[in-house]
Length: 511
Image (cartoon, rainbow, N blue to C red; front, side, top):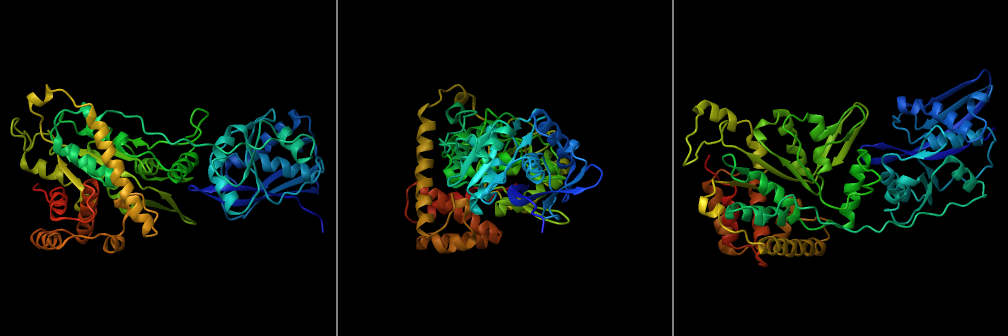
């Protein structure tokens, strides 16, 4: 039986890589070059890039073969997209045409786009493929030099960077060895402050709510008239969050790599992200998807902040699509043949005016909207969506004397210290319970029942408040999680009545 060379590459499905076998076969017949295996346009065009790259590298190209060339990308029912199959296709052709010495392909995985002169260009998803390679016990991953630092974030696999196809051929034939890339040493970075808390005058209660949100990873919405500081409060949040862990950096970089947003200047994502899409953004732009599904804004904000300004102005379908990921931390995109999951554990920060003119309920400026317009505007945000927002905060007009006062520069440092201390308490609690959560907002209802402790007066207060106010079962558990965060900020070992009372004031609001 004729031996068909077999190399390995990978296809991105969402942010996960799936193994692809690349085989090449030459048969007698008139010249043809076919790539089979459910390839898209970019993959089908690989034969032109491969042909020119080989010719300009001084190697006999496929067009000089008066034979039928078939390249198979298996499994055949998995759609192949992108240009990263160029490298394994070229190598498999060279093996099939006996233009390079055979080598042990087991334990090696290849990805790279070929330029017409035989150079290697960067590809999307290098980190994702490296994670697959480690999982499947591959030993070496051959990548373009530009992707090497990103791929080397994964420990336990040798990343082999190359500038050209000829470099890889020389290495595989034992003529000139490629030096493996050193493991990438990632330094976590604090997010660049868009604005500091100390720059915001007044608004003590709103700042307190923001501190609770940052300490527990809770969703928050600010309501109030124009110009009261809602956007400034949202922008101040990102700098209050603790620096991300190594695992969080890997998660964030996976998403950004799959989306094709990494570059020479940005090889990995080591700081929490602040995403602020415009209210005209489409459903796919926010949630993700498309013909070749890509992560949306909610996934790009994973472990960071998603800020939706003028929340009622967003399309209804966009707002309702947020409900599932706000609850589960993942977004599911369904296709005919496949269901794709994207991580989306973001903190939602929203801002809204109380009515179209913005002054409904303002004690100083009269609202010009009629009752029907106010009702319609407020109903643009559905009850189920509001029920998923832990902290609902009113941001009133700031008195002039507070606007003219001096800001406290120590406020930022003190608040961040309290937040980091609360996060450390949570991390220790979850570690002791064998959970991999990062913040109180990640807890399920079962986790709340198991981990949260409260004193007897607090239990009685919780029961009586629940009976007096219509609060859903979801609202019940979310209130307890907020109370736990308030207790953590106060370094209290158990939830007290005062903690619950403060948590309830952010949920029970008179509209």
